[in-house]
Picture 1 (cartoon, rainbow, N blue to C red):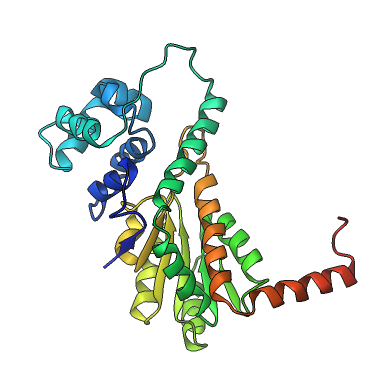
Picture 2: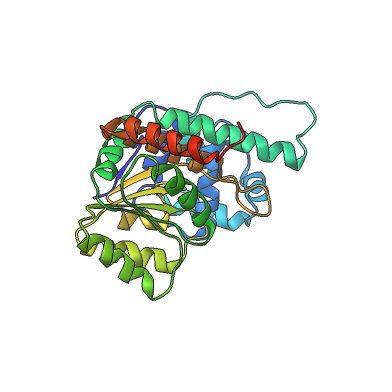
Length: 285
């Protein structure tokens, strides 16, 4: 059964995540769900037409989404959000331009992440699982390759054997098998939209081999939830042509911090790296 950060924690974001958890949502429905989580305080003031326009979907899609969640219609969903969300007062000021709005969305996503991290136990648990895995495979394909690569780069400085899996294809399962046969006990996956089908297949295979799958995803309603043992959600921004991933990237660094706390020789490894870097004059500062 998948665990999720904040699933039982306080706050509107956590309760909305709980509403979506375990449901198979379409891509359009996931887009609406992302908006509700990020802008819960504003939703009680929006009509179904306004919500549809702000999320780039049709008005009937909003109604079908509400019904899929068990409400009679959008009015019931809006009332539910009003009950759990903090009261917000609409502003009469000039609207943000699209660039400012994208930045504001990332700020809101980070605030939501801070709320979910009020209970640090899931991240600390994930840190211990990953720290104990020798080797540690880190999976991220397509849009998720960059955050996975960044995480692996820093983790290599404190963990003795990190194996980055950032290319798909027929060799991916072979590399997962090789890590498992070498002694790996856990796998970390970055799963951000759009979600490649082969990521789902790879995670299903990893769990079948006995690996514990920890996933950083864009929400507990992401398609990878059913294939993860521990899911750590962080919303992405969808206001620009391509998604922005400030919150998932920061969550990766928070997870690495938890890993460092579980690695008794992390500080010694960092000092060794700094000594080697100084001897080789790697950096100018």
